[in-house]
Image (cartoon, rainbow, N blue to C red; front, side, top):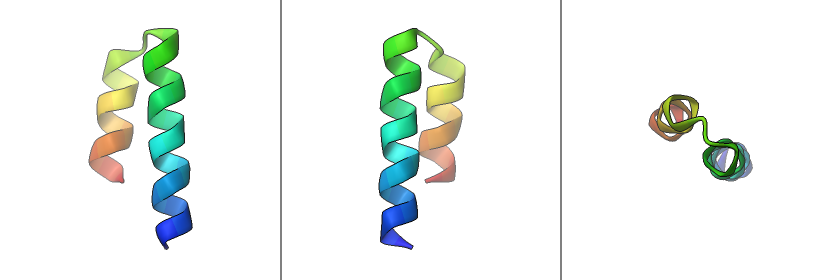
Length: 31
């Protein structure tokens, strides 16, 4: 479960780097 949260966090960071603020916010809310 913790590993899944870390994966979501990494995805949120990658999305933020690419400039998808909305997707990053959604990913952090899910995690």
